[in-house]
Image 1 (cartoon, helix red, strand yellow):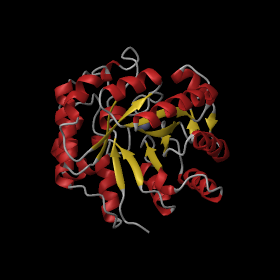
Image 2 (cartoon, rainbow, N blue to C red; image 1 turned 90 degrees about the horizontal axis):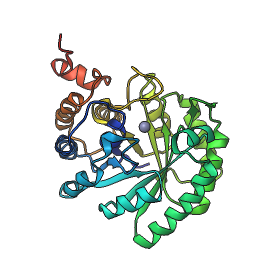
Image 3 (cartoon, helix red, strand yellow; image 1 turned 120 degrees about the vertical axis):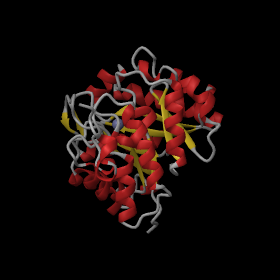
Length: 305
Ligand SMILES: [Zn+2]
């Protein structure tokens, strides 16, 4: 089995979207350049949601004007609807993540529509994307747990994937939005996908938050079953809006070091990634929540007295 693993760094989108402290476009570009310089070739840079909902990412177009000058990176952006699709494509993106919640209640609260309506929208987005030569990844948020509905069963999640794949066989990602997943759940969902031949593991990305410290254990469950795409944020930025104070996304530096130690190839230069993490944490209003930067460069993580 291949030893190559792709890390998609989602700092620019997931890492910053709930950050209350404003981060300028120039600061974002400096950080993204550092992440790219560390060898990350897949970067989710922003989101084309309405600026009223996510003011931190209101500069998506402005960011895109300079983003594509950075060589060797496949940039992606998140889109919630057709308007977001049009804005993202006009801004130059060719890889987009269309987000649907695995739970109907969360989809209503977050996207203001039923899951069924989201799938109808995915059909429209798919038609446009196929005409435009744009690749979509269908991102299921709250894939394992919903703050309103509780645990999402593997069979419910997999039936959503089946519906999406009937529209078009786009790649899929599972987002552990509130960090509540356990490795057993991850394994169960992946095994169901495999036994039903619903999705090849090459077409699946896993996106973990480290809210309860289970991020790497969940990555290992995915790796063991053949998943080779994982999302993370540099400096562990981001987090769960439902658990204030909880730690954020799985940190890219923790993930990259873990993968390297397990003999996987990621193409990441760890020193340069730690440089990027040092910068990333200055954009966060919370102390550093990852592990590697504190272990390797404790002074960079010291909280000013
Ligand atoms: Zn996330």
